[in-house]
Image 1 (cartoon, one colour):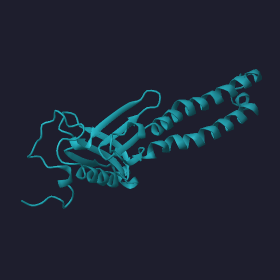
Image 2 (tube, rainbow, N blue to C red):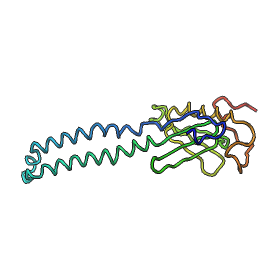
Image 3 (cartoon, one colour):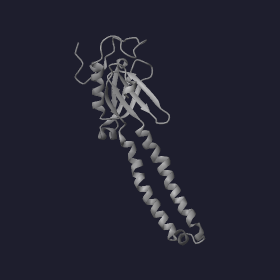
Image 4 (cartoon, rainbow, N blue to C red):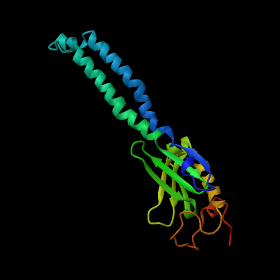
Length: 199
């Protein structure tokens, strides 16, 4: 990350999405090998022949291979891609930008200059509230906003972002070229709870 920092830019937070997306893969990683081992032992002991008398004993190696193949398909086709996707996703908050990176072989980067952010909102489901994670929505004045999903410790992350926005120098900042200001719109640091001055 240090190679892509701008002059004077500092990293504030470097994190990954809330690992709740790994709950099901982790359970399958434990359960599937146990079921595969049980199925292979059942096949070797002649279970298929007792269940279906027409199954010859010569099919035993093929049936064992099918059990192992199904287990490998679940582990490599379902669990591994989700672990890689979680590990390859990063949320980087610097003193000037919010950078989200997705993918390992095919990389996708999204950058939002903090000087362009006009509104910061948090959305949480019931499960996310229990895990203290959530989605952060950023409005930048462009037609399409940015949503950062499953941010861990979302309230703390939002506060760090608002503090970084408040610490930005006044005047033109990185990434705001071509933007038209909207003086009637509240700035994000004015939308904190109890933070807006009464006029």
